[in-house]
Amino acid sequence: KYLAYLKEELNQVEAESAKISNEIEDLSRNHIEESNMLEDNLEGLECALDSIASQEREEEDPCFDSSMNGENQLNLLDANEGQKFEILELESQIEKNNLILKSLQDLDSTFKRLDALEQIEDALTGLKVIGFDGNCIRLSLQTYIPKVEGVLCQNMSEDEMNHELLVEIVDGIMEVKNVEIFPNDVYIGDIVDAAKSFRQLFSNLVAPEIRSSLEWLVGKVQDRIILSTLRRFAVKSTNKSRHCFEYLERDETIIAHLAGGIDAFIKVSQGWPLSKSPLKLLSVKGSDHHSRGISLSLLCKVEEMANSLDMNIRLNLSTFVDAVEKLLLEQMRLELRSDDASTN
Image 1 (cartoon, helix red, strand yellow):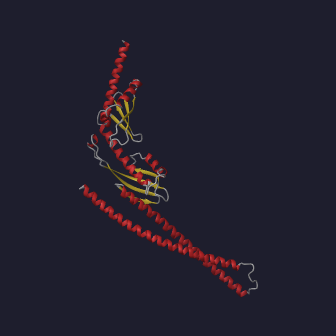
Image 2: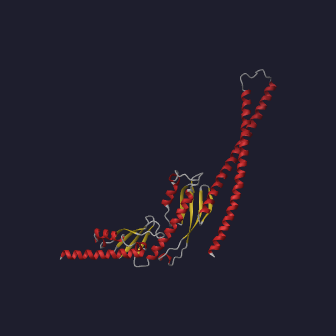
Image 3: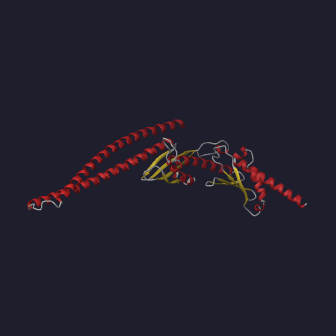
């Protein structure tokens, strides 16, 4: 049923895209024809103005016959008044034509942006343009969350996430200037900064067509939403055990609060939990008076041993933290025995 629904939605999108493409083609053709007509009119008006200006210069020539009688002078004044009126009319017509030409150019720019957005919609799943005002584009972004083997498959109610992106683009081109996300539950600051320098990063590439920074940004934001959702769910699921966890999205770090006032800082590897990339123990620190008495050498040894554990252990958050806690307790016992032996 879901597949049939997707096929039906795809057919509707394709039909709408074909309709919009035909409309854009018609408008583009009309724009070209009207632009050519306006240019011809402007050239004719400019020639007329040049002719009138030339006549005025001839009439103001110092060699002009000063013996002209009063009647001829009166006729000349009337002719000058008529020419001035004609000049005003021509200037007014030129101004109107320039305004029309500017409107057509703005319209052409808008259609080009809409065409680019349509191509991005076609390239990315779950993206729809819901608003376009000047240099600001409002996008509806629906991100499908995949199922992952292990604990993440259990009781995961969210199979899709809905966001809106307010994108400000550079005037005249489809390059990103600023982006806001609603709800603001995913950190995208680094993605936005990268998108701003997109053209500089790829300026040396020789290719028939390079994706716009907007398409690149939306794809990266969807990837970030997927990973962020899965990681938060992993932390939430693991919190049901005897340990307490926090996920710091900006740093891509998980803090595990262990018994005895000890905190384990775990670095989330790129792509985890979608990819088979192991977690890494960054450090173990004491958070209260008693735990601060643990020697630095012991903590460093625990870190080294934890990051040498089997890959399968380091892929699962709960299993990895249990192993870290076990190593910590073992090393504390060994250190205590060593201290007792040295005192005896």
